[in-house]
Length: 208
Image (cartoon, rainbow, N blue to C red; front, side):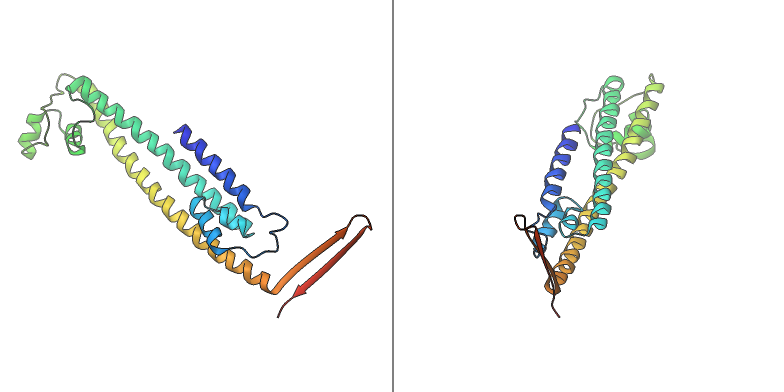
């Protein structure tokens, strides 16, 4: 997970650098497609590019939150999956990464395959299991598997939140770019300075 965070921070830094306009770009129209593309990659960067700083800060913070939460929950899902499969292997002789989620779910609800057959009928495809001699370990397995299911659901919710955040930021960046360009068509400020003559010339133009 660490390398993903590092990559995300690098991309964030590069896009924010790209988003900050230079002096020459300050009074220039902002391409709508560029603002949209930037926010599609990194929420908030398109807003920074078009001068909508407050919106940019809000979207950047929201993007960092949903991405950070998604990466954290993903690491938890992997850790919990390894844990319950390890217990299934050590105390149920069930090889990891071999059977379906339904099979591991059955293990978490019934301590033996015979109990499953009595109450549910034909069990999921896979070898038989019997945790009667390891009740404590079975409880640990059940808890780990239950936490895995719950954490996976939350992770998937954050995945949806990531898509929504990027989409909202793209729309916001498009609106911000159009507002910015509309203002530029009506208002412009030009400043010229001559260091040798110690003069500054300012021209303010407003187009009706």
